[in-house]
Image (cartoon, rainbow, N blue to C red; front, side, top):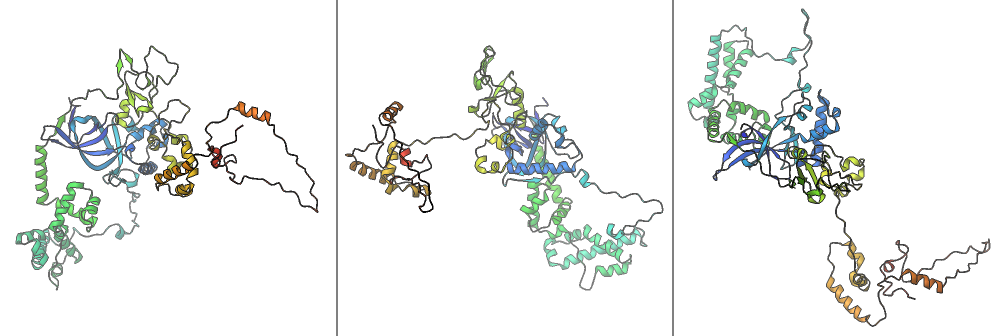
Amino acid sequence: MAANMYRVGDYVYFENSSSNPYLIRRIEELNKTATGNVEAKVVCFYRRRDISNTLIMLADKHAKEIEEESETTVEADLTDKQKHQLKHRELFLSRQYESLPATHIRGKCSVALLNETESVLSYLDKEDTFFYSLVYDPSVKTLLADKGEIRVGPRYQADIPEMLLEGESDEREQSKLEVKVWDPNSPLTDRQIDQFLVVARAVGTFARALDCSSSVRQPSLHMSAAAASRDITLFHAMDTLYRHSYDLSSAISVLVPLGGPVLCRDEMEEWSASEASLFEEALEKYGKDFNDIRQDFLPWKSLTSIIEYYYMWKTTDRYVQQKRLKAAEAESKLKQVYIPTYSKPNPNQISTSNGKPGAVNGAVGSAFQPQNPLLGRACESCYATQSHQWYSWGPPNMQCRLCATCWLYWKKYGGLKMPTQSEEEKLPPSPATEDPRVRSHMSRQAMQGMPVRNTGSPKSAVKTRQAFFLHTTYFTKFARQVCKNTLRLRQAARRPFVPINYAAIRAEYADRHADLSGSPLKSKSTRKPLACIIGYLEIHPSKKPNVIRSTPSLQTPATKRMLTTPNHTSLSILGKRNYSHHNGLDEFTCCVSD
């Protein structure tokens, strides 16, 4: 009963697809719709598989920096399996909210901010436990450190000096360590100090009456008196009393100089009503993330001013009133919801009949032992061959399956349980692999560091793009030669995106074909058999030319060997034959037959 009861603040699994891993969310609100269904307003968490490779590299760099400064178990001490599974436990917090049906909840989990003083093995030893250290913004695709992290670790520890011995003097310069602003052993009594503070408040109230801007913000006398009684006025009065060695007459004369009474304001008075409304709106959206509040709502204010205003705003009646309204809204909303255990079969579940597994994904019955080991495919993660239930995993054309244990691991943690060598790990790093043209042929699993299926085949496990062969007909080849003037192959090749005028080529070919229809020219359609060629060579044996070789002398120049080439063609790189020879054409003449 308690396991199926979900409350506000719980970290839960949501299922949005039967084949994809669960979504990890934190419940912020439980609302009842007009139709009677319950929707959950949740905060989104993202896995490593949900972000780009560039951001993954930044996350790994941030993790290495933490390891260098941490005194706990580093990643170098972990095994390959532990490193592989640790990546599945890392999440990225986001400020994004969404509403999901509560009926899609599939269980509870635990998400915590990464503790630098705790070993990373503690997250692997616990089921359904995740950690995060970075904040992901899906709109701008950025990763930032969490502003709310607790400053624990050697980086935030103070350097405590050695204890001074008895009689030993402190050689440090005291003015750089602290500044004295009050002396409790003053000659004045507490009554005299309180009377001086009352005079300071009265001077502050009179100064606000003389100030035009203050009279607009505090139109009534009691509002001006309340503003003059704030801490800023009292701090100024006590500091003035200390600087004048607790001489009351001298301190009072400073409170009212020749130009008029001194007016002291804090952030509550400096901010206008519109600025206060913007701050309350930003606080409702971002919480106490003052950097985002300043960036998106109050860029003209300093961060110090915003923080100071926040803590002063908490002492006002406005804060108390909003707190009561939120408490009343929380009372009217749902506190918890009961979601029964989801028991419907998964569509990826491989059906069984008569106690024998079906033939889905290459599985066969246990009574028949196939000769091909790929027919009875093992689990893609743990390579187990027996399981009480199998699930189809991956693209249908790859015919992969997972056992029940690895399927549950895949749904919860978003990866395979056992590390599988990916294509990037097989190949050594080289500049060629950074080429986007090469990386475009790699599968999504290999690009994101996900395990790639291992079928035992000598072929590469990475799925490449399907190749195709463009076969050209003889009429097309013939038209290229006939319509050279209209087609202009070189110009067309230089502009591959400009369409070719097929109508003009078709018309020219029809005219030329009508002119050549009575000629004995014909295209070479079939290749002669080998027996015919051998018979022709026996009847017409080749004769070797008599070459007269003469020794070169000093009087006569050496004889140069001349190569005669046909006038109608030029040598090409394809076996010293031109395009027409390779395509059975020789300026519209075919080869001589016997």
